[in-house]
Image (cartoon, rainbow, N blue to C red; front, side, top):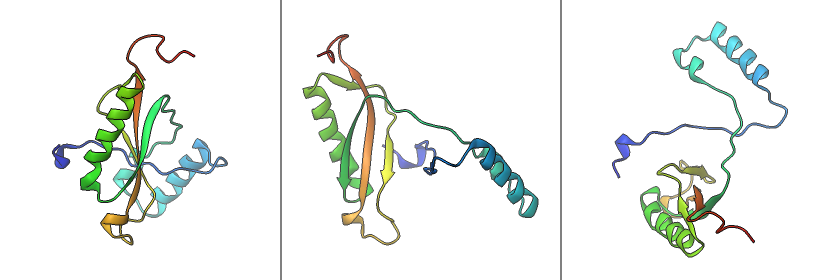
Length: 121
């Protein structure tokens, strides 16, 4: 994997009382006081991942492939497969304050049943 070719989206979870309108108003206020061309790229929305396999990865970001391999083994053992290369990384540790070997990251991959009906009880 070539890190310089990764595509990513930065997200920040918002409390329930934050609305799209409130975000738009804040963008307008900031733009009028301190213009920034990137402000227009900020979007607000909800996300739904659906069926996923996830793991708590502890360690360096460079060591994540071992955790992805464990997730693949788990998925295969449960009749699941990844729906693509897409995944989420949820950082639980501040990378500026925690040494790499102690960083905690949730890795989450969307999956689907290998065959129709394989997830039915």
